[in-house]
Image 1 (cartoon, rainbow, N blue to C red):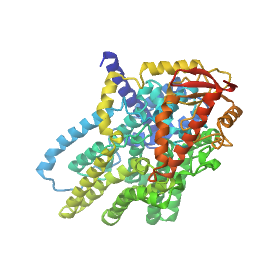
Image 2 (cartoon, rainbow, N blue to C red):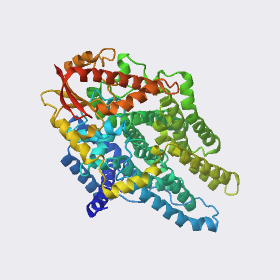
Image 3 (cartoon, one colour):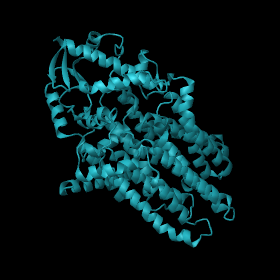
Image 4 (cartoon, rainbow, N blue to C red):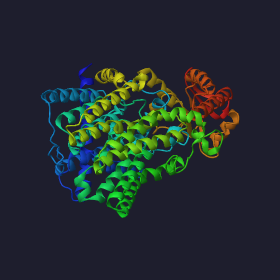
Length: 635
């Protein structure tokens, strides 16, 4: 550790704290327009993410995503937060707690538990500054490049040959990452999800405990559970912030004062929050939509059909408004308004060359999906029969229903692939809120022994779920904390300087008279302002019409690329040897899903075509690791 690295470490934490406060400022501005003065920072921040993501979509359409503009936006948000006098407390929440007989030992443990929770929170947020656990097949070849390219070209530029570009998200997550990168280097990019998510989670944990009238010991236990339950950290896909926003949906739905005074605003905020979640990853949209639908159904039962219909329509409108700028851009660049619900765009299954992800057999889908749906079904049954059936209880019940139904739908849609990873941000809040359900019942019936027993069972259930995330150390957040802290305090680069120098030499060899297609390990090292480079992270898995010519030879591929003004092919071919051996094994593994089988078959075929072209086309650069081919000239 050096003074410079320590200074950068502190600078990164301060900048993300300012970003969070700025986002809350935009939320406070929105709430002021709805005649809510001096909102809590929890309500303001929850509202602000919708405003900021919508503004980002507009800047994306106008090609105005540049560091000076992003800094100016952040400053304006900070001024709004100061001038509109955001508060820390939940001013509209009743402060009278349900009278419960507290034992002296429980009361004495509250400060200790809160201190331990604070320590865990500080360690976790400090570990977000840096990470050395990037995922080779996702982060290095696209997820790191996407925000860097967005900032360089001032918009979420088209990458029609990138499967991740088409399938993963419509861009809201990358815009939040550019807010981080406006001041900080690319090594801090994960803070957009993990630091901002943890900050929002901190305020929501105590706001929810206050809203549901938990006792001080119960509040301390709930906060401890929230911050000690690890998140899946598989790659740079957003996980922590969406998880916090799923908590926020329950927070908004359970706000008794907000519901009584302004149900229209409540519906709009629920829809906007759902829209934000959906812009961070496409597989998260069903969870938010089902939550809002369940909430509207409960409202229709209590307040009449017109009230439920109004909530549903307003939430849908608000969600669409937040997503619309990003959807318009996605249709123009990826051929789909929103993958896969509104079209598959340039994804490989559009052209019918390989089976779609959902083409797996029923046995594989059941084997992959049921283990996750079974405990969620149990969770829903417990809350349905044992929980309070008031409006606040139904807010939690709505999230549990959304977790179950959406996990089933997403699991079927992906052919049973990565069910845990695609649903975890919603599953964790639904699971943790079970503690609140039984705490409320215990407060209502303090003399009953049933509820303390159920609370204990809930704690064991949560502990078991947390422990099961350790099955793969790469996906366990706690295993990465020491590595992240060490890398952050030492300011460790993403790749060695020699690799960065190699990619600089590669780029100097690429002429600027035509486009280039890059299938490389570290696509984030290119300067996309210097050359028109298209990323092919999984070559052949996404492509412009009439589709990647997988059935043809290398010459057919060259003709296809040249027809789309892609004259140069950049490939880190030395990395393909191990990948191709692994692809052959995967193709012969019947336990793998159809998506993985199709993807590996596509990649293996494209690598074969690349090898053919390497034998017949002129090499502009070749260092034994990476080559640059001129597809228009024979060797």
